[in-house]
Image 1 (cartoon, one colour):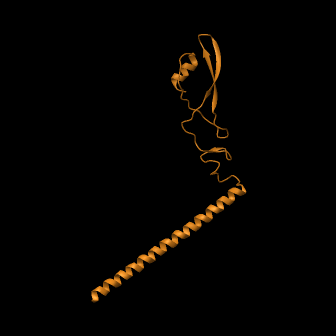
Image 2 (image 1 turned 120 degrees about the horizontal axis):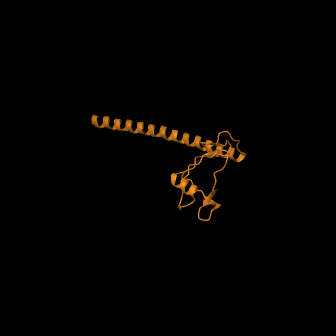
Amino acid sequence: MDQTTARICNEGSGRLGYARVLVEINAEKEFKDRVEICFKNDMQGQYGNKFVNVEYAWKPPRCSHCKVFGHTHDNCSVRPRSEEEMKKAKNVEVKESYNNQQRQKESNGSYRNQHDNMTQKQRGTNFEMEM
């Protein structure tokens, strides 16, 4: 907690539009949308509590299967896959393989076309020189 926020909490006076707080989060638990703040009201000598909405500037990727930060559930290499996910992955692999084969054919074909065109140009040049 920054000094201003800590002072307001300890003294129970002042008003803030927002507070910046560094929070340590356990990767096994979900991010909180609301937190309870306990405060002291010096004027009335009472203690109170209030729920405050939490906004995160950034959330690290978190895997709900492994319970660690660093990758998401969708990208987890450890979790078991459903049949539908396996079919999707297989279709993607087949499409990628087909696209790679097409690119390879196109690149081979363009090389052959360039080679044939060059040969025809050379023949034409030789032909013109003979005339």
